[in-house]
Image (tube, rainbow, N blue to C red):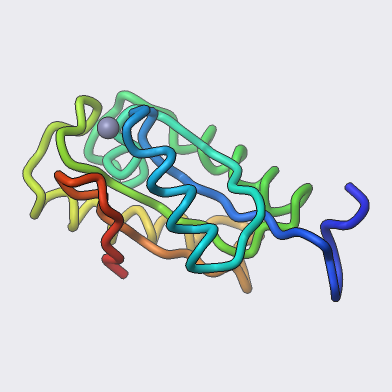
Length: 136
Ligand SMILES: [Zn+2]
């Protein structure tokens, strides 16, 4: 992976840990690229990801999400991980308020993973207009 590490790397990776919903991928990618100056955004998806990591749904596998994120961090040098929840989520069909709580718990869970020291973990909500709103 020449060129992804160290000072003056020509491009930077980030990691989106998100629901599989196709409506949210592009808004999150663009938001991350613009906000953090990223070139590429790796995508770790499972249905209702915020609920999966918060432990409030068993549709997904938090261990798999942890391993996938670890690959992005180690192999691609990602230093920015964005954990999201979104409006009209089929995988975690709860209220906006409950999503916000799940996102906060999901961020805490991701921060606790081994190898995440020094990694920026941010929670966001993708609203009914498919706009990204920071939560944490
Ligand atoms: Zn969803």
